[in-house]
Length: 162
Image 1 (spheres, rainbow, N blue to C red):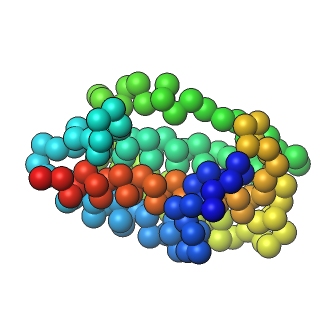
Image 2 (image 1 turned 180 degrees about the horizontal axis):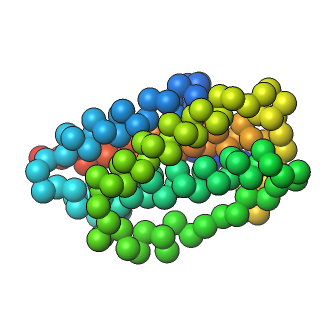
Image 3 (image 1 turned 90 degrees about the vertical axis):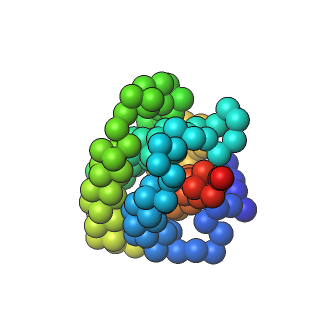
């Protein structure tokens, strides 16, 4: 069930967050390759982000997660810096989705290595989010996984359109 701490938990369910985040780059590459020619700017519903915007957002989110994870480990009582995803998305129309995909995949590999190197104590380390309140490093990892699943489902919907 989703919560204030992790609104993406509903997408994750009982799946292992590490398994999900490890598999996401390959799934994202496969979905990107399934998009019909010239359909990178197709949306899954009116008023929603296009495939290009979703891929670019995933790259930007991975940058944010990389910083958040490292700050959480390095600092005591770390407070996550939120960002306005819609403001970041304003320039996605001119972004190269292939470059964004490559950024996502490279950073994800680095983030997975960083996460899996952490001790159980670090996974339970407390931090907070100004909008979501107290959480742990593990909650951030679970959020990454649920976030991936949410956007992968959106890309699947785009790829399935006629």
